[in-house]
Image 1 (cartoon, rainbow, N blue to C red):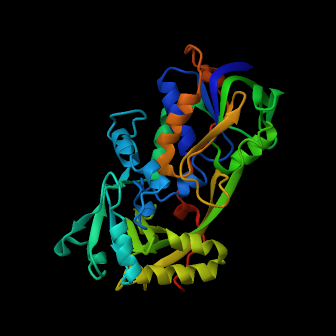
Image 2: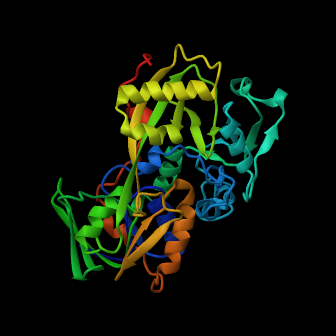
Image 3: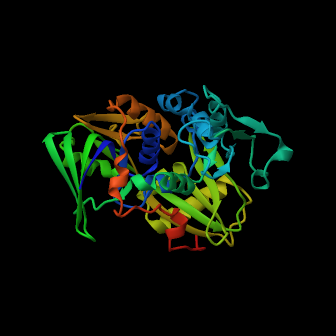
Length: 399
């Protein structure tokens, strides 16, 4: 069977699903291919904060990163409210804002001042008697900033339900072949379902790689390794579960967020914290026991007086896949390519709409025609990924 498509998207994370919704809403024939679970990797492991640039202004300078991201909370809010495409009313919002507080150091005081530089939404001080109990003992001021916190799992699952007929599970190693007329010019994509031996051929007008860490292998297979180089920056994220209060926010230490905490509930109803920020970057070089001790100590420093006696700890690793930038974090999204292939990395979940807009501007679609998704009935479909605390097996109270 052969099916023609205006666009074939590789990668079912936030970027690929957002782009799929946008192009299909315009009437274009599109299909998305995923080798794992939808959102597996960076999207499902993200903390869900729709950053507005705060963490990039703590040194008092409006950086390129802050300029690129500062409009994103407003864009996401419009989608969450159903006022623009994609309609994300199905996405659960954990919190409408984040808290901002600091440690007792002089460097932390300077970071709180820097956080007000050039942002669309600046922090607003919280009166002492309105602080949440968990922040009552923190030194200096406590503020809120209008960075919404979403649940990545519901974000992915909602888009998957809307576009289930255009999502295909593939075997990227044994069931995927490209026919090229030249490097970067894909004439056909041949898919084989190993379970049933079924073969389908997709004839794409344009192809977009939004597969995160998988982009490197895809680029190599279509002759684009020299066009779109990739770098991986590792994170070691802390998980905590038990009798914890709801908290979403950043603790500032100098020009960094010492810890960034987001909270949710697991399938058993226990409160779960994801803890990232500088502690996750520093922990990339640590083994699990050392990291758990270090990260728990940082949480205690950020939240003096927090009782952790009955709290369990775990951790997971995730790589941030980005366009190569000499080991530094890219300041913006990346879109590049050759022939009929585009390669894209959003850098952060918050920047996904900016990436989709950039890609859409690069695409020269023909006149919209009949959607070829119906011709793919019977093909295996990928399932949404589960949050990291649901598949982590090792938990301990000994930190």
